Amino acid sequence: MSAPTVLALDLGTSGLKAAVLSARAQVLDSEVVPLEVTLLPGGGAEQHPDDWWKAIVRATAAIWARGRVRSDSVAGIALSSQWGGTVAVDAHGAPLRPALIWMDSRGRDEVRRLAGGFPSVDGYGALKALSWIRRTGGVPSLSGKDPVGHIAWLKRHEQKTWDAAHRFLEPKDWVNAKLTGRLAASYDSIVLHWATDNRDITKVDYDDSMLKLTGLERSKLPELIPPGSIVGTLTTEAAEALGLSRSVQVAAGGADMHTAAIGAGTVADFDAHLCLGTSSWLLAHVPFKKADLSHNMASLPAAIPGRYLFCNEQESAAGGLKQVMEKVLERTDYAAAFEQAAQAAPGSEGLVYLPWIHGERTPVDDPMVRGGFVGLSLHHDVRHVLRSVLEGVALNSRWLQTYLELNLGRRLEAVTVVGGGARSGLWCQIHADVLGCPVRQAEDPQMANARGAGLSALVALGLASWSEVPTLVPIARTWEPTRSLKPLYDERFEQFLLEFKHRRGMSRRFLGGH
Image (tube, rainbow, N blue to C red; front, side):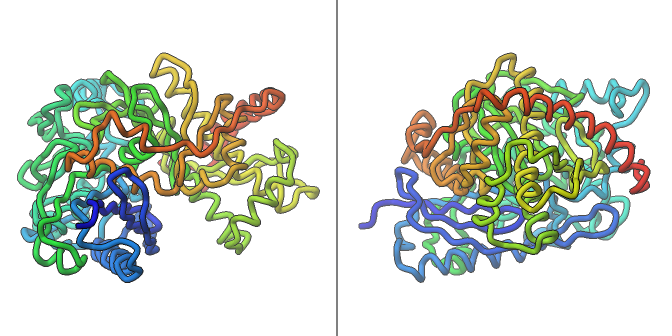
């Protein structure tokens, strides 16, 4: 009989990744299927859940066809997924419309009405904000990009969808429902509805006062299950579609940032990881519940039972690099691009890239701010443009670092970097220089989310323990900061913050923001 394996699914914004992991979390085979995002007027961003499922079926079929691993060895499945999306489903779990994903900001006006009040603190009614922080650990994003904003927008603008909706599900929970037939959310995935009491991390539940504040109806929300638990076994339909046995167990999995923290091996308190994916974040597990309203950061239920994860997110990291590469420079050879960027001197000869191409979420929540290039002159060429993009994202990471360290009450000793962008040694070194601390590259950094999902499945199945996780994630290489570059990047960071203030006002005037 084959040694047990687990199937890890990583549902990102730009693609679906399937990977089969051994019982020691080694990736035995993987497959990627690209996904498209539909951008709509007014800040809309949608994907159809049926396309997610088709990608899952296609990816798993490709793995079994290669024959490197046997489908009958799979004992469990877990999903890592984009977080903060909304799927409206009927009583059978079928989508009623395309999903509003984490980029969708059409609900900003509705959220501001829900969250506002007198006296006002940073756009929130003070008493409402205190209630949210006390029970949930945070507050809804005023950008409208959380599910509470999506659902409020549907209720106001698509009444038929609202009336027909049996449940509103996160992307992760919709895929789990497709796999098992069970409409359930885990404590970590439900958080961005801002309707649960998270004070007892071992027993999270919906709170009547929070439901009233958000305008959500309990009957339209899924049942809640603990993170790290088993959702169920595969339905006959799902088993046939994936070429697996019906006995395969489906673990709860987690949102992308939660599983990346696991896949980076950073499961100890205050051990931080940085993700360089389409978006970016700098997170650490913490032993306390805390919220920083002014900077849109909070400790929220983790994908590890009984733990909190101090959460934040910046909108564009590798996504910004892709925008510049493919839509501006019309290039797809990233290896050559990194080689060219390495030819430019640190500081890009005064050229600064501002990565706010789809607004910003943390540490300032503003969907209307826009970035670009500052300091462009006649002597700059493609080398400077490319390096400035890498440096601009790193400066944004330093902005997160500033407030993460303030909230943790300590400096970060090192940062483990994951995500597709972490494959670049140059980008790792730039981050070490800008952050001023060692940067550790996790082995196969682009597999961190899938590896984290796989590890959560292994633990749920009893094939591994949470204490073993750091030993199952090797560090491929460590980059130390270049001391001589500290004055340069300190000056660049001050300029970066000033440019945000300038751009914020200009963006609102040009885009007609409010």
